[in-house]
Length: 229
Image 1 (spheres, rainbow, N blue to C red):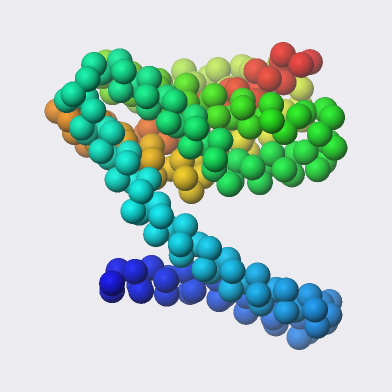
Image 2 (cartoon, one colour; image 1 turned 135 degrees about the vertical axis):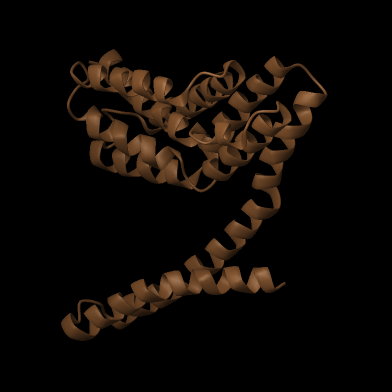
């Protein structure tokens, strides 16, 4: 119970400074009316409650799910099945990640959904995360040094940036960061630790999975830009 209360107060401490700055700005400049101020306070309370329940759910379900699948399934079925299941789960979880929908929503509002359909962007990001999560697991299986994979991946990103329409390049880099959101990160990290441990690998082998997974959306969005050019 003490851990739950500590997590709640850590969220409150995160929200309060932002809320305090906004209230000070309101007192100095007066840019909000009474209704907007009430909306701000109510919204802050809902964000605090939402983050608390969201993190509780992640700790109770997503992290254990990743760890159990990564450590238990390889002992009960073929490794190839586990790797493909990780691809599918990473894809589905990423589609559900709120951070991805926020990015897609902003892109849709700017382009009016015509130049780049929201569903296509989400699908592209999710496929990138799934594919590169799979690649990260294959790297662990084969014992390939992560530095070599990162070097090849970012060299490919750099090369594609010369052929991708310029508006897709910053979007691709944003997609790489956004795609590793609050649902995707716990699953990939916990799965990687469990997967590496059951194979007798060092826990260090699981590090870098998230960075490698982030390359997927970057390359996916750039390839999408080249395709629709």
